[in-house]
Image: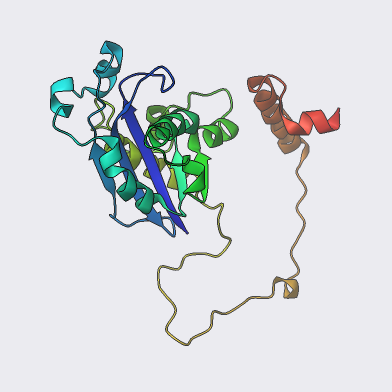
Length: 234
């Protein structure tokens, strides 16, 4: 599967109120591995960044004066994203800006180009309810080195998010153990029939059951009563 981790920097917070994209960073994953086939643009937005936005990304208006417009890179960007699963942290924000830029040059919305958009922020909120799930917080929690992130930058943030996403989803895609080697050409993988094994059934003891219930109660409290298992029980 081809996946693209994407991030943008913008002149402000509202695409509908005229803010524009000033930087796009994309990192490619194939079979959950970084390929190095990344894409990065600085863009001239045709307007100045808000002061608060500049404090976040540190990109000056003067630096962007001679950079290309979004229209000049749109075809290259869309070709790069075509049919890929796109991973974005707080996807509605970036997608709203990309869709606005595309609409201004008469092109269809992003969803018509890509296979799917995955919001890693929503994934993190489901896995860590009640906790901070900013990119920096996830880097700390998932042991991703973000020491070089003093300011936001689209390519750097996309690279960090790629590592975060891999750690966030580790073990979800396959039950096959990676033995670190590729099978030789023409050699079939050995399939083990687990029905041949008599697997013991181990029941939780009272202490383990109590600890598990306490954990579920804590998760339910953190999510303000929105846990599915409590709703089904009720």
